[in-house]
Amino acid sequence: MLSVRAVCKTYAGSHRRLVLTNINLALAAGEYIAIMGESGIGKSTLLNLIAGLDQPDAGSITLAGHDLARMPDDARTRLRRSHLGFVFQAFHVLPYLSVFQNVALPLRLLGVDMREVAVRVQRMLDAVGLGERSASMPRELSGGELQRVAIARALVHSPRLVLADEPTGNLDPDSAAQVLALLRERVKGSGAAGILVTHSRAAALTADRVLTLGPQGLRETTLPESA
Image (cartoon, rainbow, N blue to C red; front, side, top):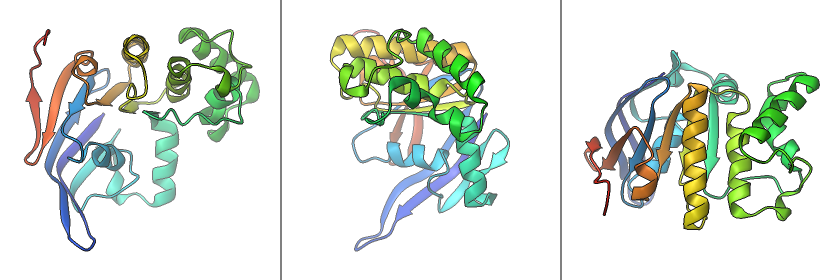
């Protein structure tokens, strides 16, 4: 599903800064992993590279058989729309659209027929426990409900890979636990691959395996079940 090989990324500026060095990662369909690491180490940068939003200075990233570095910008955009789902800490739910309209966005961008959109959106909202809130506006929802909307939107178009960047950072512990369980259930149940970036040990423990990002790259990490 995903192959990251010897990826390096440097940001230029007043002081040239090496952000990622020799990053290697292989991810199979159905696998759900967590990536941990200190703030500023490059976790979000790595997700941006995997999504084709940025380009590495060295190495290669192949997603579902497509070499991102060899694709023009418009082709990468189409690949993101069809193959990727995103869940963010800040939800990024559009405040002027209803719950239904927010979740329908990926399908509308793909040109799916509106009758099919209605069926798929309602099915996904039912799956995340928001079947009765389709007409609600984001301002009427709690933080946990907003994140469930974000998960529904990320999965409604059946992506091959789901990227979640600190998805519980703005939630209370109870809501976070519910969202993490739902995210894992929906990603695994759909047969997609998933990458969860998190500072939270509790969040990381919901993944199949945990990797830690450091100055020397990614390494496998074993977390104890209890602190």
